[in-house]
Length: 232
Image (cartoon, rainbow, N blue to C red; front, side):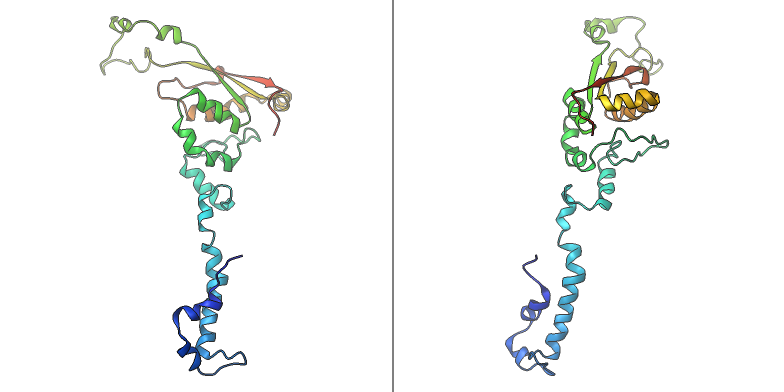
C-alpha cells in the first residue's frame, strides 16, 4: 500500500489554514468548495495516474516487468532465438523445443554478451535451453603450424583472389554434440523431425559464433540423449 495519497494531502501541500477557514460552501465535514475540488483532483491522481507510474522501475526488473513489455526488451537485446518463442527470421521454425525462459535470458543477456566467443558462453547458453553444447574442434592441428605456411605461393592476400572464401587458414571448424533430455530425444526419434530440430539449433549456434569460426551446418550437429538433463 502506498504511504502517500494526493486526495488527503494535496490541499495541505498548496494551501494554508487561512484558505481552509475562509473557504465557502462548507459541507457537514467542514470542507469548503475549494478543498472538495482539490480532493477530486487528488483522487484522480491517486486512481488514474499513480498506478501507471508507481511501478515504473519495475519495467527495468525482468522479474516484475509486464509481459507485454518483454518483447521490446527482447528486441533490444538482439532478438535472442527462442528466448521469446518468436523468431526474427524470414522463415520461422515452429517447434515446442528449444525454448528458453524469457525472463532469465533477458536478465543475463548483457553478462552473456561479455563472455561471447568463449567456451563458457556456450556452456552458460546451453543451460538456458536445457541442453549441453559440446564444441569439438576439427582443424586445430593445421592451425598450429608455423606462420611460415603463409609464405607459400598458392596463398594470396590481395583483393584479386578469394583468400577469404576458399583457403582461409584462420577459420576454425567445429562440430557440435548437443546433449538433450532423454524424453525430448525419444520424441524426435519417434517423429523423425531431426532436420527441423537441427535447423532450430543452428539459429542459436550460428547467431553467436565468433567471426573466425566457420558457420555450423546440419552435418556438423549430432544429438545425444542424456539422462542427466531433466525434461522441462
